[in-house]
Amino acid sequence: MSLDEIKGKVTPEVVQSVLLDELLGRMITIQELLENQVPVYHLVSTIVSVTDVPTEVNLGTWVDCTMYNDGADNVYIYNQWNLPGTDDSYLASGENLKIDNNQRTNKRFYLVCASGGTATVRIFHQ
Image (cartoon, rainbow, N blue to C red; front, side, top):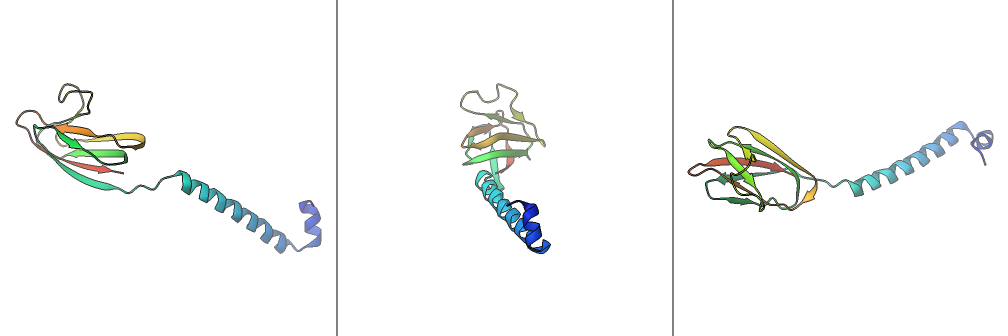
């Protein structure tokens, strides 16, 4: 039965109610699909004291993080494949750095200052 055939047999209000009910049902289905696909993340704050001894940072499962160097010295960032302080991966004093993995990860990384240096790094991650 077409919509035009239905319009002649019932009032416009009934047709409108049926269409709105159908629309609502489809919107609920879409909402349920989106909720299953988009994970909910909570922002977590971590403070790390960094010295000239490498400090392992394990954020658990995370997607992205932003680091703020509140200390007086540069902080070098590395993982198990590069040596501390041997590349351009450092966070200068007073600066921030965002790392975005675009997906959940359990990656760990290390922070270290040059010999004799110290810093405090605030890390916000989700």
